[in-house]
Image 1 (spheres, rainbow, N blue to C red):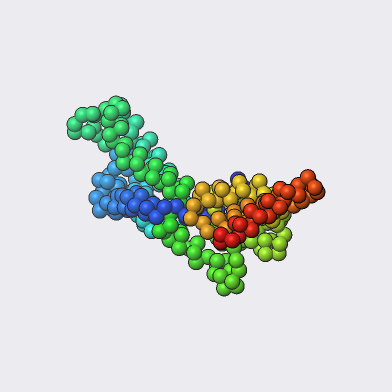
Image 2: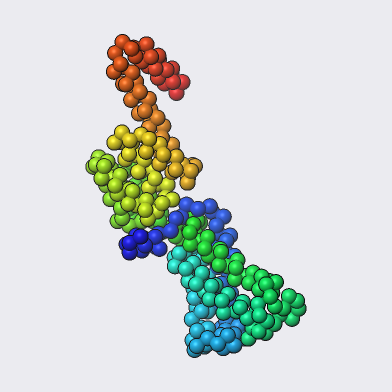
Length: 294
């Protein structure tokens, strides 16, 4: 993954996840937020704790971690800058577990032993690590899957200038959740110019950055279909619909692909001459009967 694609990945997470992702964000973000605030309110949770653990410049380190938790917690709750916040929290949780749980295991933690069993060993670690463990894995989920539909990240995508411009022009076709002048937007422009080979290449490049984006999958299928590559088109349409089952444009395009395949089969039969005459007539009758049912 090159630098540009890594940058796009970091700042453009998927935003079509379930709305209920909000509850995970509220849980993890809320805990980080109030823990950050309490590091300022209660010195024993901030500078005192970092001093006991032997961190260099404990006062500055405690303040830095507290601000990371406050700002990152707000980002989680609002669903904004989700991936940078998640990366910061994953690093913090790994450092927290390594700096505290080894001492808990051996019973020599500078923070002291728990007041009641289990006071050392694996049981003590598993009990003491539960919050760090939960926070880290929620952060991993948000890093991979994004903040969901109810988030500022999603709102920013909907306010994407490329989306507004296309709507104003009355152009057809989906607009990706991918923002910015990237491969997807260039692919859309190639489709409008009917340069479908170029469009396929650009959408494949976009797919490397956003492998689960249903809009990219749909438009890659569209471009392949326009080139007559129906097997590839069917594959990408199905992937798009797996990612977003309620996707009207993908279903329309998939139906058009099936019609295109049926017409190609008719032309093949007609090319057989006398050998395919009867079958071609029957297929045409099937077309007419199907059209009459609409």
